[in-house]
Amino acid sequence: MGLFQAISDWQAGRREKHRAVMEAAGKCPDCRGYGFTPAYDAVYSAPYDCPGCNGSGLYSDWLQYGGASYAASVSSAIE
Ligand SMILES: [Zn+2]
Image 1: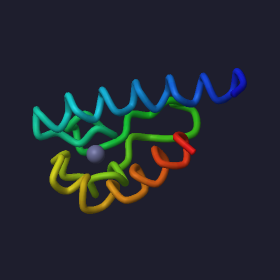
Image 2: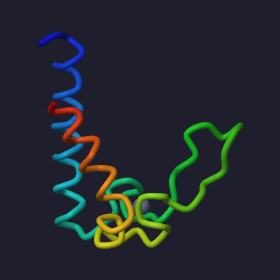
Image 3: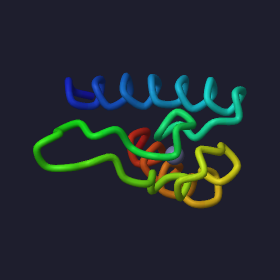
Image 4: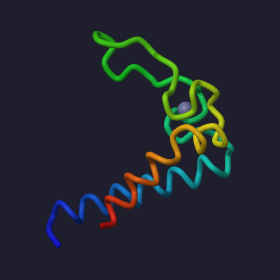
């Protein structure tokens, strides 16, 4: 149990909380229902279709397209 583990647990907890809020709203957690990912760096990237929900912005689609990778990331954080 080190600092890195503590940070991983904290991040996983925050992510899970966000996921639950988005689930209740029926929106994709990755893009918050917008259907595209905001450009964090305007120099390098324009907004593009969210890979988590395939651009639909729906939680149900996120679960289908991105839910598996999310579950894997959460379980690896817990291990
Ligand atoms: Zn999305």
